[in-house]
Image 1 (spheres, rainbow, N blue to C red):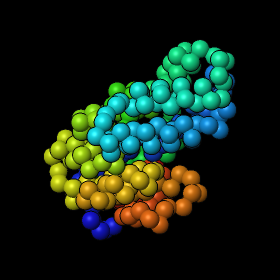
Image 2: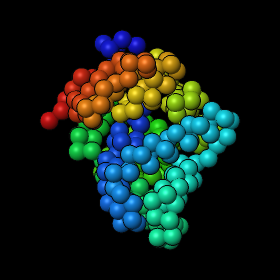
Image 3: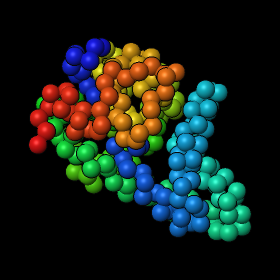
Length: 231
């Protein structure tokens, strides 16, 4: 799909794309872990979930996230805190995370412009729904999807994107994946979707991965690029 062609469906990633995960740093600190380990923890969760998919295994996001936290606690605070209670405190904050400030306005504008919106996450669809309900935009989406519906195969496996396409009944060429993650953009592009990379940080896009159809600073910027009216 060229940058000028209008997609029928926007498939939105959730963690870090829509949700602001930075408040989890305070939860880590509360259980005795340095807040700066948040990015390492989340990267480890993605690594292990994707590795399981590549090996032919499967596990839900919560189980992989729990194991990664237990590993961090064992390394950083051996014998310091009750690990199970610490895990519950950190993971229990996921449905309470805020969205980025640009998300509600961008989502409403895209929906008003006639775009069909769905979410697709390696996490849990119920968590997505809870976050977006708190933000007041859950009803702008047709459905909230997770990779359990793709046989537990985490993005960027082709089966994950195929699951989303099947759920909304469109071919790959009629959909655009929106994400902050280059690996997600690369996977969706290889599956035939158009892509939009949200540049939420100054980190450059990897030269080894397929480039995005569009780049945007956030959801409102993307909405403007796609012809939606933004206040």
